[in-house]
Length: 572
Image (cartoon, rainbow, N blue to C red; front, side, top):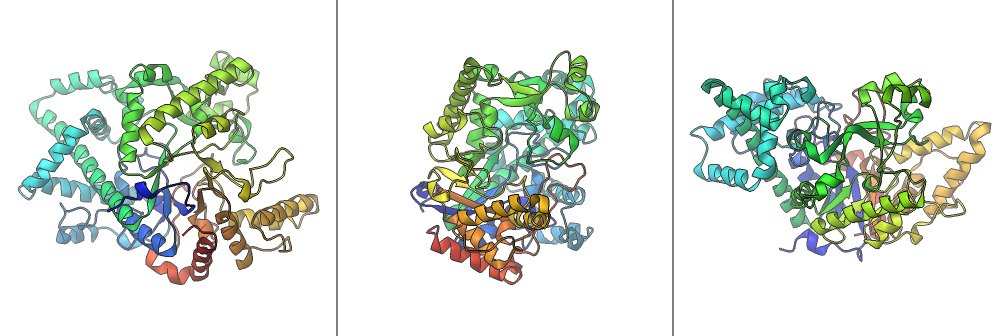
């Protein structure tokens, strides 16, 4: 069988869908999209003419559930796993029914994701699977497979499982600064473990073994997903987050690889006027910076290990915030201190931080020497990444405040970047037409951080009723329709099926190798997955209406529009 990877070529244009896995409702999910759901989605998408599904990161996350706040660069998030008996063979059907009957699964499957309840249910089923696996019910063949997995993945698995067991030991508190001193470093923690009495040590070792088991199940399931995509001739694009959590297994096990003094983020940007702090200072993500010099000393083994693991599952990889590999905006304070700085002037902030302000590391672009240093750093790092991924398997998310050397460097390395039509403009300020996009690029109207296109359009249409903004927004609406080849449509106007058809087809018609619509745009929905800087727990909980099997009725016209657009633009 020919794998999908061997047939991916920029010579053949591809149409795709972007979605958080959590947002999709599968036939057997229990409140969140999972590996089984993803296979179901792939079968549906293949039938409609798509050849690519792009998902967000699936690494294990912190307590805020953001897929970009990961506590391991390799370990998978357990909530992404299917716990149905077909996918979790250590749990029999009768046991699955017995456990799920104690929970209101029907309620979990309705409305937004309820992470606490879903995680508790999946944890219970995984714990039962582990118990059965380690009992007489476990087969010798599976025991041998598990041992082989532990040996093959020991370099990252052993410190991860130890760290994950420490979280459990500390009442599931991932914030390592809250732990007792004897848990805060690998050396101290192993000395602590050696001093435990036999019963307590056995209990801790069992926790370590359990978290290793969960990752074995995860790796088995995600490799099964890869195999199903290959059968369908579909490509799966994964996501490499730009950072890892300050409270991650990676930072705990190898702190020398990180700069723990500053917090990564993004500069103020007019697109994201979501809260006063973001508008004034920028986004403070809280991730530690990488210590590139330390990483270089062992030829970036941490990165190579991470990329190798990702490439074993994903055909394509999106590198989050590619700009950060050249230079990254960072803060001299942690996100929990943001409110303290909100109303301060730069001078007042400096008094607290010892003279430091948010800014770019290693250097800003204020001098030619700084710019060249940043450019060479980015080129070196992306060459290293390409060594692990191979050509045309890496997509650089090159959005945001671009330095003039970023895109030329990526283009020289044949690394595709992103094209968001509303932002792609020539020297005269006019929107660049899709026919002029470089073939090595990914075109999309919106990422997970943006409102769906329908919401953009409706906001424009509402603003067109105001005299002070009418001329500007009408010009923007007209410009986008010209990009889509439908300058004949009169604006302003409401979001109609005709507008929907124009936008779907217009993006697919561009010259980019990959053209990807967010799933909310495919179905003309208003729902939004993430609002950067928003306060509250609503981010990442949105789910697409209806189960996959129901989409044919719920979105009949939208699906027909999309399939026809894929056909007419040569992306099938």
